Image 1 (tube, one colour):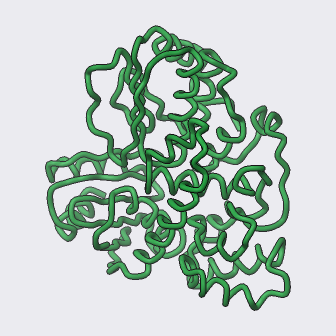
Image 2 (tube, rainbow, N blue to C red):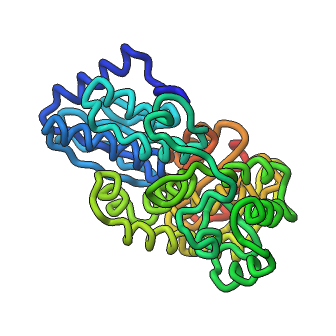
Length: 357
């Protein structure tokens, strides 16, 4: 795992801009990697005693002008911007110049895992984590962990009773047997990419918090989308673990239920889901699961009136931003995924997005 995406000069300039400010605004996208990056930078600002304000949103508003330095995390609109995934590692690089004592290696690694990175390097050495057989879940109870995981989508995901019934078939629902069962359940009737996606949930690194590093990352991404204020409090080190677990359970249940009940359509190159009554943040989880475990096409989009989220095998920033602009809205996208808010209905947006792909 690289130390960060910033070059040394860029890192030092960013650290200097933050250090010279009397008030800093951290504006992050609502996902686990951005949450951790914002939390780490906020810890650094606490260390150097610089006032700040932090916020998360699926599609952040244009920045306010009352800050000496606005740090855009996961999008380009700020005085300085962190945009190279993993954002958590960019934040670590900046903290190495700004406030190295504020770096939490395990939290930073979990944020990087949210971005799909494989743990490695000095942070992994400092965290002293080791892998073990099994599934990346944030609970000691395999039923609860599998039922609420958003790393996997199976026929029983999101439902405690269904998961308990499914796991009752196993002699010992732990370790390799559990991993094999979950992997086979996830790839059943799924597109070929599901076999690669499920690898993220297997042979996890064991952690003190949330049992496994992958489970830790799963919880961070869910709370960033479901209750961003609680997520920021946790990333700052406050004792809100119970509320974080609750947000994770709620978010996963909503996402898996929506994925099952969504109206779907298949077009050349696009798999579309029409979802009722979903936030932009929830749509991001729905479409990620749909792309990994349901979409036969190279791009998937989940849309509700006024919001959309997309995941694809290629960059989506231009088609998603162009479509959102045409509907008097705005979008943010990076690394093959993005979210948009707009003024219009689902069918009109899907048709326009298809034309832009």
